[in-house]
Length: 160
Image (cartoon, rainbow, N blue to C red; front, side, top):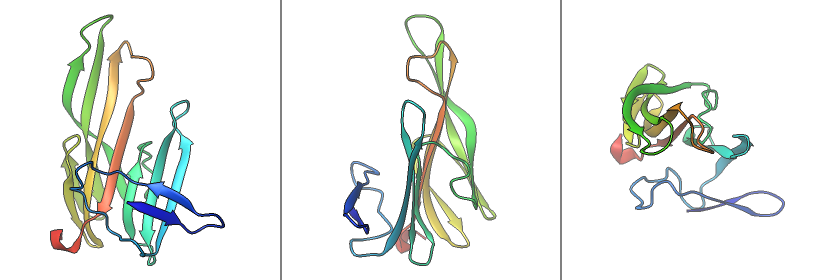
């Protein structure tokens, strides 16, 4: 998917949501969308948050590389239950814990397993949601921060 951003000089934003194309985008070439990208987070390892809305300001897509819980004021995204713990085989004790996410929008909520897309039906539409969180116990490998990532995509009409 190539999105040309309307600006004095054209810029491009490339999105890769799933390598096999199973996750449909809620907009097409020629649609008017408002794109907000913030890449000021993450310290040494830059991460970006992106929000895309339609001309009526409805959420089409949000990707939070930083896991920022304030990215969308009407959504609540939090770390959920522990799904997997992996101990590194060499060196001092180092355990990577992977968690699912808890999602709430309006009166609807869902608990999602890590890396699995779920469908959340809300008053303002249906949304595909995916995410996970990671935390480390013991010795932390270099460049291995604790983090939470998530993506929210307005579902096509046929999945609502």
